[in-house]
Length: 629
Image 1 (tube, rainbow, N blue to C red):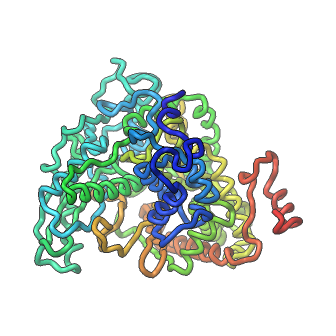
Image 2: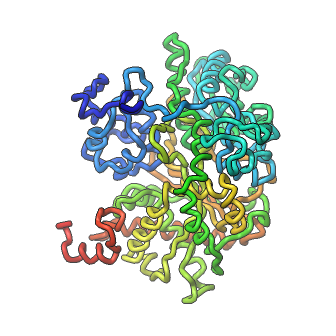
Image 3: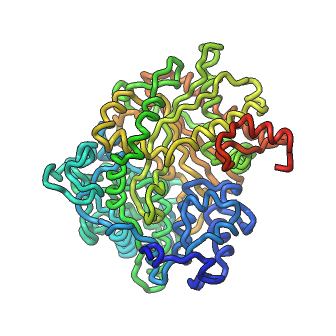
């Protein structure tokens, strides 16, 4: 019996509750999913994705299921047709609460191999030592200095990466720092061999080595009203950003704003991007709630343990970078990055782009009557995801945007750099649902849509449905959601030079997921502040000629989609980018209209087990058999 077998058992084998004291696994998962998705209730016959859940929220379900005694994976949450089916396949967390553990001894401390995204930042250049994300939360009235110190210390001691130290600073990280060939670490990326200096590698010191008290600024703001508070907090967050110092092991700063015993205060966490991402913020927010509940009950704040340390994950990535399965992907990525003459269809050199500028920024918001169908109905038409829908709209928008210039000679190809959450299940026995860190993957995807009928697409006709199926299948064909590209581009000395020479896609896309807005409860996101958006001092280079960052916000009036477009001033003029942004939303409106068409739903080849079936075959079957399928 393996370690995994000893620590878990399927609920079916363990009786009605799997021997865990969970009498109603399906009911428990229904409640957890409803909480994550912000719904009043979820039934066992409903599906997570059918309710609009995305991969980031699936990770939240996995994280919250563990303390409830249930072990599920992100893949299971996303692929289960119903919550009842998810519950039937769930495992019971061992009574020790350990759940799964890495197959080999997990390494938490000391130097580790830079992950691909860390190496990417080192190459970017500019003021990367202040490259951060921040989150501002409502705090309970009377949340004092000592309480702040204790909860922040609990976060520091639980999540190893919050104690990260980078000798030489964030800009000194390079892929060659124990990331090329076999020099510097063993096959797991866990031990130096003596052939390479450890000075350029990031490292994690043990718990207790970073003092929370020295990292928190306390601000009295009892006289400020709600309208004035965001301005003060924003000012202090900017000041805290300048105090980040990865070379000295300072990757977290905090600001506590006290408004007295009768009103909620604020707690701002400012964390270097090397140590945090969008999923991490959800973990930290849950931990802050649980720490405060413990303090209020007179207990010590002790967040749940982290099954897989970040340093161990980094070692697994490094070993995978030179594996046969990743080497087999090299030709795929080389072909994806082939040149193309059309705008946003080919590659560019990143070192020729201007720095980011607030002047080159444009934000649009899609209203609830459009966002709802786009995010919650359209994915279900093709058994797909929110990203499938958003990227379909983007690819069609690019084609429509440039068609007046390219005409019938357009090759129909759109090349996009896509950001993913990066917490992929690349090996057994790894649970990243509670691991804080920067896991982001960035990988190129080429959508070859040919010459679609753009007028029909804008009207929400069959063209937009065909494009949605094609985009979904393109994305499904990519192994492990693209994690291999970064491994080969930054972690493999044989493939790194060739891929680096090919350049990067002109446009980058990132869907950040769904965020609740308007919640007034303690530890909810405070109004007047962005949620976990990247920030840095002026002069940070653009990573792409054009970038799109989109996020869904759940407010009292419904679900909205906001998209912020940024661009390099020397790449495209502002009016061209704004036109493209409007075109994207026009295509998303078309997708919303398409959801109401009879027969809009349908299968794609990745939905069926028979090999060799094309989309044309499936369309023919559906046309002949209709509702019998």
